[in-house]
Image 1 (cartoon, rainbow, N blue to C red):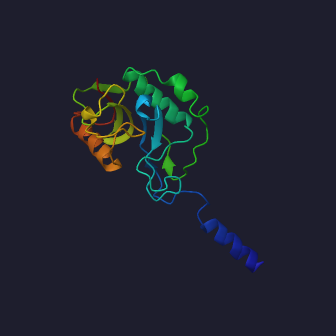
Image 2: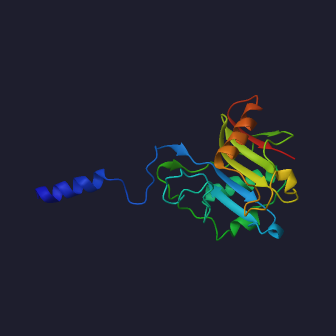
Image 3: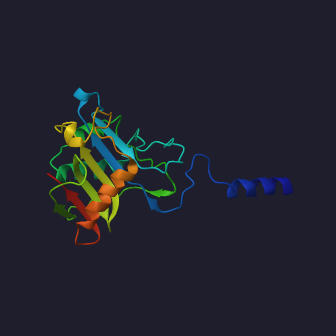
Amino acid sequence: MRVLAALLAGMLAAPAAGRCQESTGEHLTIGLFIASIEEGARVFTPVRLLPFEHPEAEGHEFPNALALHRSEYELLVALGRHSGLGLAATLQRYPGPPTEDWPYDDFIPPVPPEEDETVVRLNDPPLPGLRAALLVDGDPRAFIVDTRGLTLDERDMARPTTMGLDITRAELLAALAEVATRLSQPGRVIVTFP
């Protein structure tokens, strides 16, 4: 009995297999890169900015979301709608219908915008192709980058990439932080760019 009790106690104390080991209650920034297939890019690249050490991230700057959670789908569709992009039909099928399963117990699923969400339109995006972002008290929660129609020169690139930009995660987050400095109000704000 003691051995069984010790085994049970050890199993309960050990983290569940496959769970991420970061702090509980953090938000994941999600995003969508839209690029030109004529350049050899993927048309849609949904990403989750999981910590680099997370097993699913495999150290990548922009880990690809292989399936969208329903709240991610709703959030990206709403961001797209505010920036003039109709994404519902395409994202509904990418690569299959959105799932109800949120596989990251240590992270809070995204919260889709409300109908009366504050929307601010700014000019001069700090990142080529930045179309929309959701910021909560300055913290980036979601973004859409659309580089279709931008030349390589306009993107400061010498050659095309699969996601349309040649940036690091730190550079993306710095650009989103710059957007936050342009906002005068706290809380949840959707920012769009022309």
